[in-house]
Length: 161
Image 1 (cartoon, rainbow, N blue to C red):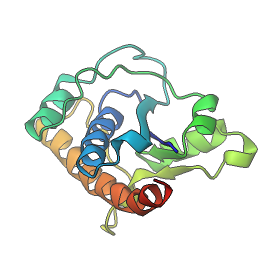
Image 2 (cartoon, rainbow, N blue to C red; image 1 turned 180 degrees about the horizontal axis):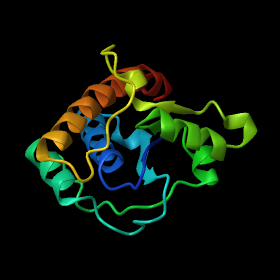
Image 3 (cartoon, rainbow, N blue to C red; image 1 turned 90 degrees about the vertical axis):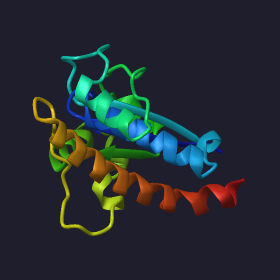
Image 4 (cartoon, rainbow, N blue to C red; image 1 turned 60 degrees about the vertical axis):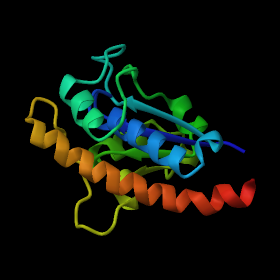
């Protein structure tokens, strides 16, 4: 059994690659990596093939995550079918993903922050074009939410093994 997890932001240059890197690391530490298919994508096509922004790579590396090998790609309707968890960084992304989804899978996309402890934040603000602190803030929210996601998936995966 493999569970597919896809992280989605606007261009797949900042938030979703950071989420992919953080989640890969957390899943490996929890011994779940072999049971997961992890990826990231963007809702837009303007940066396909590009690496994450330098500030995203630096912020992630400072916390022990290597995202330098990730390349931007655009989310597709097939992704909605392929991945079990499609996790949007903002409510706007969620709307776009549900619009893209086949009718029978329209509820599959969710907000990543739904897995974070209740902090009253639903959207992870886009740090693109911002400061290093903006990237740190986004990364902190991503770490909290992906930690919650690992906690949610662990019993499901352990039961299936």
